[in-house]
Image (cartoon, rainbow over all chains, first blue to last red; front, side):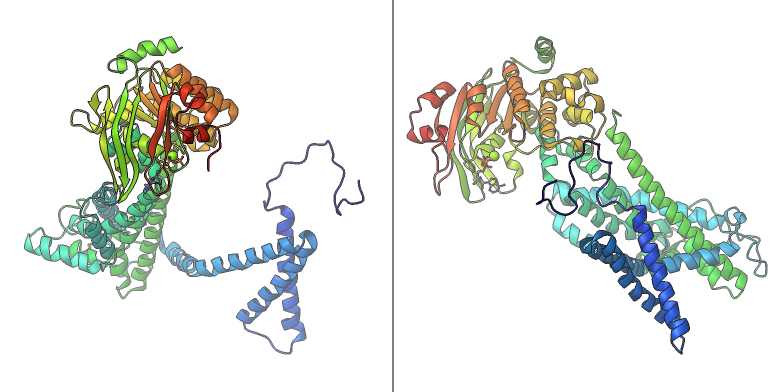
Length: 367
Length: 272
Ligand SMILES: Nc1ncnc2c1ncn2[C@@H]1O[C@H](COP(=O)(O)OP(=O)(O)OP(=O)(O)O)[C@@H](O)[C@H]1O
Ligand SMILES: [Mg+2]
């Protein structure tokens, strides 16, 4: 070793260096974090539990703990890895705290729904209807099978209408760039802010009353499709816009007509983003109550036919149950909310899996 | 292998191998700005034509006019005509997609389709033109071999094309344009992202292909122009004026005995 070598330099060794991933999180990092958290907790407890003559609110305790924790963690990280890494770690902690605070309301809502819903959710809920259940029976009697089926049918039909239409509109706006693209984009953007009750009112006044269709799940689906279409269109257009123009040029230079270039190159490239657009659109409508009251109305009886007669769905189920005076009904409403949440989660996972699976086989030699 | 492909070629390509491309009085504008003026070049079948000239003189624009890619730019206009075996590619007798299929193009920047596998990229042109390859595997192998990419990717044909290096992507793009069996192949600096070995292999490929495909290549590499091309055209855009062809002729003559002093300066690296 030469004299001028910086501290820590060592002679070149012939032993193969261990494989590593720069910046990866190691066990010692977790121990440092845990130790800093534990020691600052003990210190806080010492201050407020032993030294101070008074006790503080839990919030004050938490804030003090957090401040001490930051200091302790900075010290530990600096001692083990130097000030650069320590600053990095503190920023990571601050950013994680911010993310945690932003997520907290969401987690609280989900947690409360799960807590309330689980207490009265039984397997029977998925298999029974409210047809034979009286107001005084316990929450474990009856179920929301008719509502689950209604939601699946109504949202499914709405998606069948608005997903192809929305993606075609997005293709028109961004690929065809036809003469009415600008006004169409304006209308679509404005319609994303359409109050849902107005969509319901429109279907009610025009189709149900004027054209004498009568109430049905399908009428509700149309109201939902009106709400879903602009969301899917705008989201899909944003996604298509980031597909590089050089790919379109490559497809056209091979002699493909424009529709094939869109179908075989542009849309597959944007696949994951388009699936997100569909999820966004579905999320927009799956919890809608107001337009459904005007169109599908809601019922306690199973009606599997979305095209004739009133039909229930989960938002309507929750709405009707929670307005009933009995506690048992309120419990059932929470169970309904939980099922709705689970349904959304399932849809989300299904769409994700579809995106990934399709992508994998798209990469393979399928054709 | 070359003999094989020539046999299969005759079933696909109409007429004789390769096509003669004849640009007559071509000018081009982007909006109000004129970037090309009165370009006349004949690109014979069986020959490689090199386009050389400093950056921004309109070589890519000229190339894109030849296979009607120029009109994809919204404000772009042009004058003059381009004849493919005597037929005007801007006329009514030839469909736009037919022109682009018969006159293939390799772009300055590699642009493989990221959502497709390597093999799917090679056959993408067939799918895009609504045709099916008779023997897909053989076609993929043949095109990848011609683009000198086969040995590097033979074990991962189903892997996504985005995972290739920049130079590999460019060779994949060359393979992709060969798969549709064009009559003419336009190459816009195809080797600018390649290492010397791949460059030499692509140059060899160009040499093999020129019997079957008419090749027009833009290059900034003077040695490459001399190695691969039989004819050469020197483009130049002088200050505030559109690009023109200053000199053209057999490559040998343009490089050894240029008539115009500006050509002599450029090919000897004494420019600007
Ligand atoms: N899409 C476009 N819109 C407006 N002007 C353009 C466009 N494409 C090219 N130009 C202009 O046209 C002229 C010729 O460009 P071109 O791309 O043909 O040059 P080039 O000879 O290929 O240069 P290089 O060797 O750098 O690729 C340039 O002055 C350029 O600024
Ligand atoms: Mg160029």
